[in-house]
Amino acid sequence: MCSAETPAETRAAALAALLTAATGVPSRLAATGAGIRVEADLPTELPPVTFAAILDALSAGARYGHQRTDVGDTVWVEIDDEFDDEPVTEPEPVTVTGDGTGTGEGTGTGDAHHDETDQEE
View 1 (tube, rainbow, N blue to C red):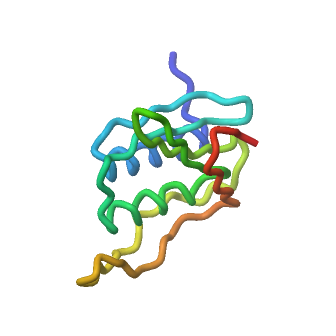
View 2: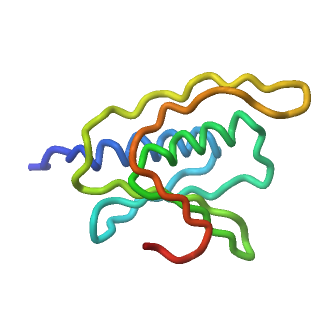
């Protein structure tokens, strides 16, 4: 008999799906001491709409970051086992202008922390 998904597992699955849709590459999930970590490899080219979708997904976690290695870039987001059970929402539409910049507001929630190093808190 399978146990029901926890709210953290549900949120992690939703964020993994959003990152997979944005990057075109399957996301990876891993258990951490305090919750679940979702990782996604970044494509070499990031159009503004893709960039906005990735940032929106990352902002829905407790912590997020970016790792750069010799083989490419990876973003990650962590979801704590205990968090407010606010649903993950689809990102707001982003309007891309002729100069390649975008406008729009993300809908992510959470106490996000951006870390551009390989170190975790």
